[in-house]
Image (cartoon, rainbow, N blue to C red; front, side, top):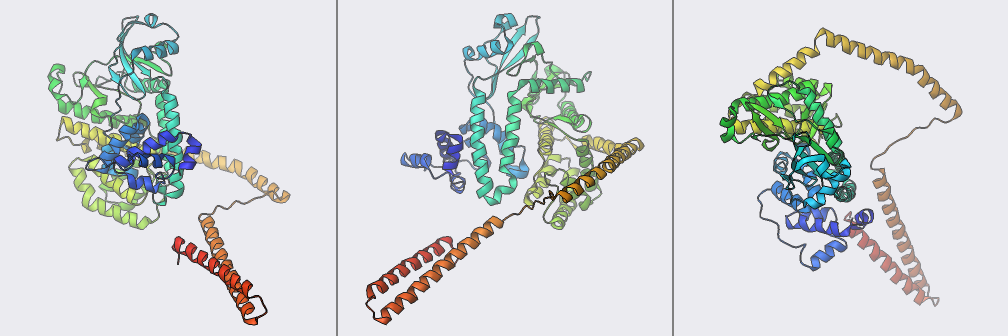
Length: 556
């Protein structure tokens, strides 16, 4: 493992750091299973008595992993935040612990950050801004935020990317890809999680965050969706003061949404704000199909009378029209206690769309609907219902599509935020009208006509293309160019086993032949006693080697 990783990454020191941190926080079993305990870094750490360091006294595996990722560095923290959206992979409890990861690091000196601004915006700082506070008001692993005033007198927040962070991210991604590839090949019980796919999903996410122009377009899309809405404020981005590594937007004046003691100053009511936040997310999901995926209290500000503003648009999700229909189908199936329909709808959210034991899954979902779902939904705890359903999916090794996992995280987060403001908030009456509207639209005459036209167009396209495809197939057959490709799984292991068995049989036959020949030489008394004894010794060595190989393989 070490040799393959170090060859691809060329960073044995970084690998050694990761090994040391994982062991210190009680993940030595993981290190051994991945083969990371071998190779030069681990030997050096053992020699310095660092790899045997005691694990931290944290009471849950999720908290230990959270502490380990924080110490490993910013890329690991970002990866942990992505994993917090995947309870279907890491479990509900660990996902909640990872959801508390804080992306906060010490601020870099302004003298280092200033050249980034001037290089990206192609002007001296004093020509760009009337005022610029050199002290960062927020500092994260990828960027820092400053307060400034534009030449036109607008108060703005300026987000600046840390210099050199892309090189750090790329190096860490190379290491993560190598480890993920090893896990996929050698750790069979977690291969279903698709570790390589998880790393690539993370790579796409973090590279989007590194391009501030993408976040600027996302913010503008939110602004259009909420144009004229008196309850939601979306800051404006200033394109002339923004680039891939610098983004300037309106300064948001307000307080965190969970600072209830400040509500009197804004003439606001916690219950009203909680309902507004929940309705806002439902509108994003069911109407806009474009939603803020991390609506925790730190990302929502109270900016006016029962008016909120969302911050940090680095984590957003988008849905297909079929996704909102599937959500409505799940809710309808639960309300009508139809387990088969619920399973069919839920499978649309998974990456494979299939399950090994379909009947067992239907039976478990039926139990869930009968004994848990109705009571949980009646109490208005949608997040709890989501957690229970996620546990079932994980049991059957069903992996949610990334956009759906983001949606579930957003729903659970906005509910927990709402309960922090109003412990009695009931999410069901808020969500139900939107789900019912989707159902009504689905069976509306105009929608049915649109689907009929769509299906007719598909049939017409198929009819147009079929003769051409059949003609091409016939030409390939006539020319002898028709080829069939068969994909097999597991045959390489069978071939290896057959090779080992045949080799052992061959060694056994050769050993037996040598023993028989040596015995004949000794019995014949023709002066070849030495040759016969040598044959016995050689046969004994071959036999001993064969026995040792069998014992090592543990297949006796």
